[in-house]
Structure formats: structure tokens, C-alpha cells
Length: 125
Image 1 (tube, rainbow, N blue to C red):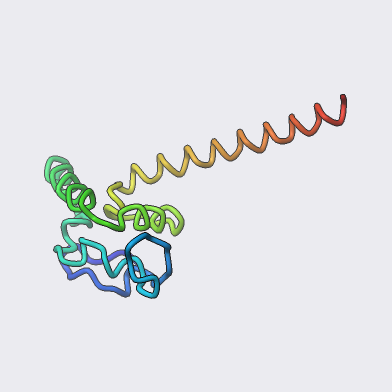
Image 2 (tube, rainbow, N blue to C red):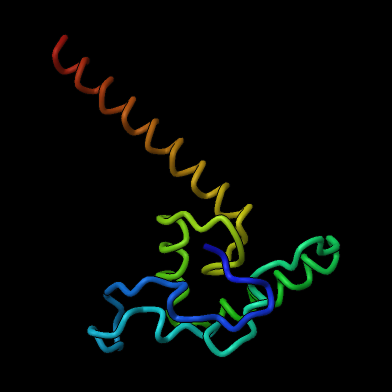
């Protein structure tokens, strides 16, 4: 469930999970080191009826926070695997995550087709 636009980001919004990362306590969930935990959640989640220029500006500011985050990759993968429908996660907006997911699905279909084609060629040969 998405966070309200101007509430504090809470730990419960991000599931506890272990993701191996060099130089981090392996027992701590990845989100404990997220830079966004110190920022206003409104930066990462759109208020209702936000004008386009304001949304783009806010998203760019959120992406700048993500860019300096030591767990950006883990955050992005979490948002892609869930999938998170709202907000900026791992430096990507919801629309950008939809594009990444569509590309991943296409790549998976292509790999499956290639594997089937390779298997049928081997069987015919």
C-alpha cells in the first residue's frame, strides 16, 4: 500500500529482507541504510493532482537522493519484484519501472523462443 504523500517514510513500508551487499552488516535488512529514510516521503510519492512541472521537478530531486544511496540497486530490484506501483524507488519512477519490466518480459520471451528453436534444431539434426 503506498504511503500518503506527506507522511514520514516508515520502515513497515519496505519489507525486511536480506540482500547481500559488500561492507554492510549481513543481518540488517537493506532498507536500514536507505538514504531516503532521512528525507520527506512526499519527495518520493506524488501528491494528488500534482502539476506536471512540479512532478518532474520532485521526481528529479528524488532521483538525486537515490543516486547517492548505497542500497539503490536493492531498492530498485525490490520495486521491480513487488512491483511497486507508486513513487520513486531505486532511482526510477513508476513509469520507468513499467518500461524496465516490459523489457525484461520481452527478453524472457525471446530467450524462451531461442531455447525452443535451439532444442528443435538439435532434435532435427
